[in-house]
Length: 81
Image 1 (cartoon, rainbow, N blue to C red):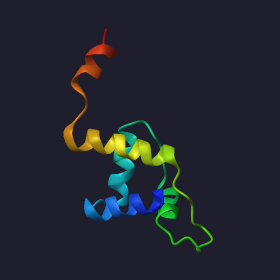
Image 2: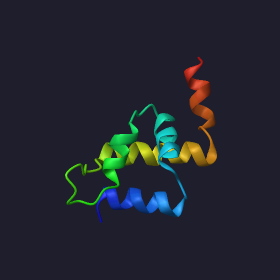
Image 3: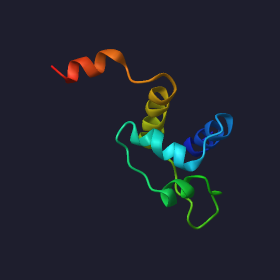
Image 4: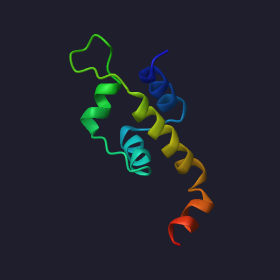
């Protein structure tokens, strides 16, 4: 199973739209455009297909944690000191 497959399955399971995925990635300061995201969800034989890298999937999962349960309480306190 590829990173693209994992991202697709999470999108379907959590009923996420592309703009919501972009917002989740923005929570961890990872910028991606609509067209870049669309390329991840194409079939492998499509000319505009793009492989989902480990960094993108890792940032999506970290952003998803923040999206679902909120930011970690200790992190904000440490940044303000």
